[in-house]
Length: 309
Image 1 (cartoon, rainbow, N blue to C red):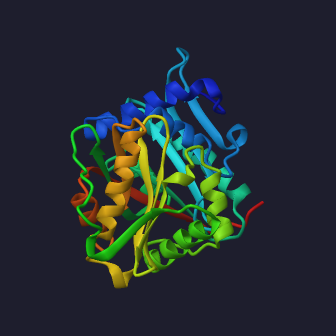
Image 2: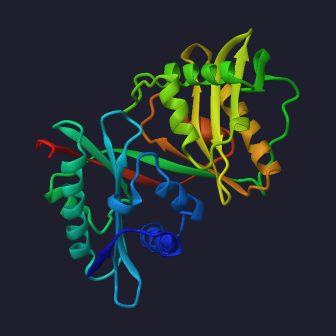
């Protein structure tokens, strides 16, 4: 097998690789070209040294792996995609070996957790389990079709709630504060300073300040949403409502507000990945806003106990 780093001309081939893996597992393709570009633009990803594809003599890709810093401080995030074909286990073994070497070089400290997402029953399932990876959580993907769904303006804000765009730096700091407090204690969430959070959002190619929105109740910031605006499919990046204000329809109205904005920008659908076991009932909020489930993905984790080089 021929292994090499990813280059710009690989985007279509990587997209097809994702699509083949998804179609084999779920019967449909989910990943878009914009998703691939966003992955390759992940903050901290060195495409030249921390990506690899396996390529046949005919130029077709049978595997892809990448490693970069995770959004959670002190963790690493890996990606592994395999074509559903004979030889997938051998390809997985080779790429997981490469991943191990990268982690040992990049780990900022011993016992670092590395996470990756895989569809259920992925080709590498048994091999990953044998090599120290384990499933620790799951996430559900939802999507709404903006062409067939109606999102009428509410006759009046629910229970006196005022929704408005985060117009300046002070508002964006308020968005960050609400999200941090609303998500405190949730699975794998680690608090970040505003500077860290804002830098991470701005490094993404689909960053759009006009899609940061606040919900206020009696002048108090009670909820917030951040959407992203890539070219092919819009995305809900963050949604949070403070405990004291849940159950009032704030989350649903924030979502429907950005759905209307994104439809006006020419988008046909909006997606989101949600913690399947979220204790705050997030799945029901997204369903109430008009989104429907598309499938689940498992989060795998491996703890690398070795000292870094």
